[in-house]
Length: 200
Length: 200
Image 1 (cartoon, one colour):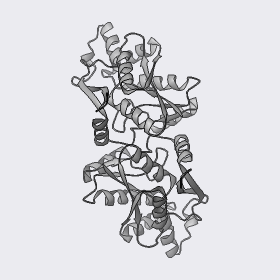
Image 2 (tube, chains in turn brown, cyan):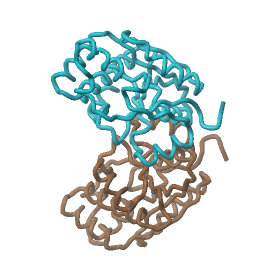
Image 3 (cartoon, each protein chain N blue to C red):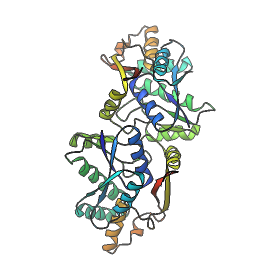
Image 4 (cartoon, rainbow over the protein chains, first blue to last red):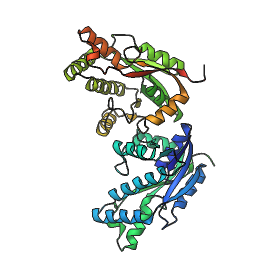
């Protein structure tokens, strides 16, 4: 039972990957890249430290360009991040060998998060199962589990070297002469997993 | 990490209990009874076959009476089942020793299912974590996991001896001279877990 899991190297997607292994799934981690930066390497590093197989899924730069348009028009990144995540799920689900996909989206996330009709539509259109191990748990439970499992580095988004969509989106905005700080929230902490707690 | 898990003996609540153990929780199964029938014994039996601790949570008959009023007024049992489940979660969460509660509600269930504001309100009012292991998985994944794990008996609701709210609700309707078949769907299959697959 092989599942392809969208992975950023953060604590949520790492926790979700761990849960999948506990349910008996073989987990292959997949990080999206638009080929602009090589920040997917931070997810690769986290994946290697946790002992997971890891691949990069390259997506067309046009997707990121459209997301940047959205973020500029909206003045905030929510719709842009949601758009990229939906395209990433579709790209992963459309690969011929893929029967199960998953991610680390949470009950308390506003974006990215697929509502029930969108989740079912994704499963039906691509004939896959879409598994979200964190959807049924809240902040307190995620904290309880991640603190027990992982060594985590937490920093402000602008300073943390990470592998999520936001990094290339911020880069593209800068290329267009736009300061990402006018679009992204000022103080926004993000996490990166360094390894298992108490293991080498 | 002890979690009190609402348990009917069906495959969904059994699968959710198994997932909780895989995440490292100590799981105590709890079955609601209104003291009218002793059908909680079917959940006790399933719990024993699976090797879980099990308790009965007795709730006031007035709750079931109000649920019966709702079912009769609506002509279908959805609001009644939802009402009982919310009251059961609140009763469990209000016990002084309880820090974590859970259930087997699913993404694709219409009832019983707490929306996000209700789930957060439950956690805040009673200072508990509310964990729903099946919320992020669909029909296909539930089938894949339960077929691997459990020996399950599936029958029509009227014929299956079970420990869910429906059984006492149907009984109370009959006491009031109302045929439950005029309120519950005609053909409604339910499941009961008999034990682990391939284990004694």
